[in-house]
Amino acid sequence: METTQREELSSFLSVLPPVDFCCVYGSTLHPNNQDKSKMVDYIFGVSDPMQWHSQNLKMNSDHYASWMVHLGGARLITNVADKVGVGVHFNPFVNWNDRKLKYGVVRMHDLVQDILDWNRFYLSGRLQKPVHMLVDNLDIEDVNSVNKRAAISAALLLLPSKFTEEDLYAKICSLSYMGDLRMFFAEDTNKVNKIVKGQFDLFQSMYKPFLEECETKNLLRFSSAEASHTKLVQDSSLSATRSLVSSLPASVRSQMGKSLGEKKFVSETGRVMREVCIGSREEAAKCMGNVMKRRVMVSSARQAVSGFLAAGAINATMYLSQKMRKAWNSRA
Image (tube, rainbow, N blue to C red; front, side):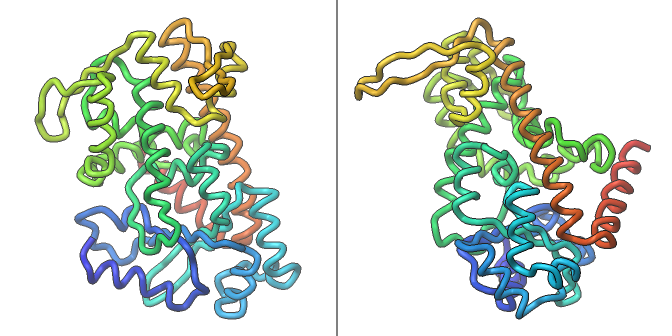
């Protein structure tokens, strides 16, 4: 990202309370995007959302739905995000410096938990795609390495033995849309392909070290190199499958264990460990896919209700109508 663009995006932070983490994502990161009319998407991580919203209400009350401000202020905003949604409060359609902005606010603890354990698989899914970090006081970029490694493992389980590099990034990108209710009526059906094609170089630089790591472990190898059509071949044996499953977050493995069974063993350090019983690669892939679909479906439904309450009826209807217009255009 060019320095001028970074400075422009960072300047919005000057009118907000301090944050511990900030990233921008979406079409803003497309190399050829010069459209200033498109919405800029931010994620803010803060230590105490209620305190942050309380300060922001004093500074920028127009960012919030008026009924939430009048009825409960920061406490109500935070409770809706935590108890109805998935811990993220979004303010859409914020106008600033002739740009339309949307920002989500999340508690840092919840962000880290989702990155490491996919317990909600909401922001963790977002951070598996290219983002540009503007503030990173707690080294989330390093923490996110666990998330990216797990994303590659999940994608490889769902891919055939031979595939292209573009196929891999498309599968990683699609993880957070598996079971997403919006995909049925309010999302562009070509969204995944558009994201990957528009940001292919960013995906490459993001996942290169993890692909090299997989190659070192003999989990995959590059059979040819030709731009986005680089071909890869992966080991589809049971031992490789077990290795991929072991790299998934504990909460996903636990759910898989309930369906496929688990066996206990004692590690070299003396700890009792659990391992998912895997009869075949196809069985493991299907089970993991079902776990992810259920998780994404629940999170997307909760966040949709939370978003409707948080944004207010008018803003929520505007946002949904824009999404549906894109979705229907993609189906035409």
